[in-house]
Length: 516
Ligand SMILES: [Zn+2]
Ligand SMILES: [Zn+2]
Ligand SMILES: [Zn+2]
Ligand SMILES: [Zn+2]
Ligand SMILES: [Zn+2]
Image (tube, rainbow, N blue to C red; front, side, top):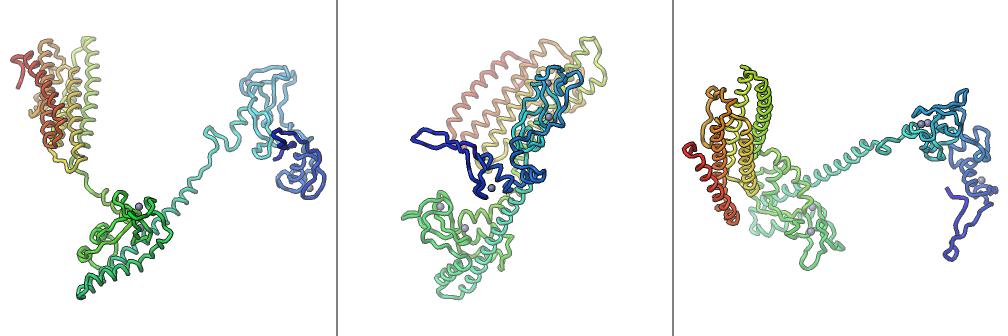
């Protein structure tokens, strides 16, 4: 909508020009200012249907637009004593100018709670398009249509699904077209080869006929005016030659770095898409020595999904299966230790109140211990299995080392944390030592608290952990030597000598009590 003033640029200075008289461009009537012209166009010439109907239907003219005031009949009035109550905070007052009617709902509010503004038409209805700003209460502001905390919300999901379906449909059609062309190419080439077997000029004829076939199956794009590769957009030139993709006909380069196009042998093409209905047997087809140039996009389109499907059907490598089992077993161990710690706290409490441990508590502790020992033994054997696997590739080798480090760290951490639980460690699994049967575990040592013996236990545990670490580092050194990673060998050897010194120290302090 244009304002009543317009600005003229006059030598850099802006001069206000008052337009007091203006003629309607439709009927030529003089209407006054620009705002009045807008009203005249909206109502008399029905530029705005709604406004025009309202004023014409009520027998009013555009003059009423200026003079008419917003609808007030629904306004709440103060009580007979002139007192009013704010609908939001409940403050009451009898001073008239401390209260205000919400222009929309008409209820009375204190000045504080009627500070929002909303666009209303003269009927006090919400009209974001043609309305003018009026004061309103918080409720009317928040409840106006289309308003919420996140802005206006329009659900476009179905629209997007439809768009996506169209795109997917296009993609499927494109794949079908490419598959169809590939089948025709393969069939044609197979026929040419079968015929050519009897010919003397076999090789020459076959090449000729096959390249003719390629051009009939796929219309080749005209390469005149094509300046760069349709995949990598590198400009063609003396070193970068133009090639045609035999399936889509586009012009692409054959750079090794980008693999924009490749000559792929018929054998590979057929093997990677065995599901297509060729005329000949696959076993016959893969014997044909012929290559077809395909662009990157066509390869992706034809074989991308097939490869994905094939990959997902593959069984997982042994190492990954072991990783998963290690993960779930470690969870069992952590949970059991947590339960044990909770149990020990409970036992401590009952000891403070001088209670004798109950029979069921003893069974409970036995159960937890058995569970823990079994899962630790399981974890150990899984970790050992993982360390014995010969990695199939570089990635697996990396995973293997990570598994070794992680599992030894986990075991050390958990066994050390078990020191908090007295008596828990007697049956802890030593490397290569079988786990005792649960019925042989003595339940009486649960509350055992002799200082010297517990010290012996502590040293033994430390020794065991150290020896395990030493064993692991030794195997890692061997591994690194095999892989010729000598810088790793140096750091690992330093670790090893450190561990050895610590082991001798611990063994010395244990004396005869140490086990070997
Ligand atoms: Zn007019
Ligand atoms: Zn209030
Ligand atoms: Zn209101
Ligand atoms: Zn390219
Ligand atoms: Zn292509």
